[in-house]
Length: 227
Image (tube, rainbow, N blue to C red; front, side):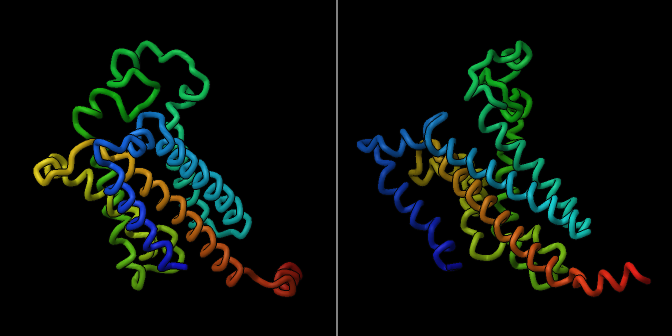
């Protein structure tokens, strides 16, 4: 199963390379603004938020405070990205962009990552690059990290979901010099969103197993209560 997850990004990127020729418009429709790729990304981050929120409640219930707070932070992060993908509901509800954002948002949308001063400094590009780089190589540290902190490290078979974001945003204008044109960040961001969702699944499952392994039995709990 791990091999299948590891290979999937290769398959998607192969489809992208085959379909991004000028005579084939399907890919450009998929990765267009508010197109299917963006909707799938939003769904992935929503799923990551829901699962990490559930893991937060389970961790608090099992008195694993460290995991609970880590999942809490992750929940807020996943929800923030989900909301940004949907322009905080503007995409679905069609409400008017606030006047401040009309003046200071490069796309005139209800988003923070498109604010002029963020766009000018490419801060969100740096964020994608660093998150992609972290997700690509963090698994190398797993042998030396305490079990309670492993939820922060994506396993090796998810590394290729993060790598394209690191390469695309880290490469900048380099790709045009080698003949890679167009805006392919939606593909990299789709893989990144998928990697985040799968990492949440793995982290949630590992926390559940770890919590069960260290939770006192019902007999032990009764003994503690009596004494």
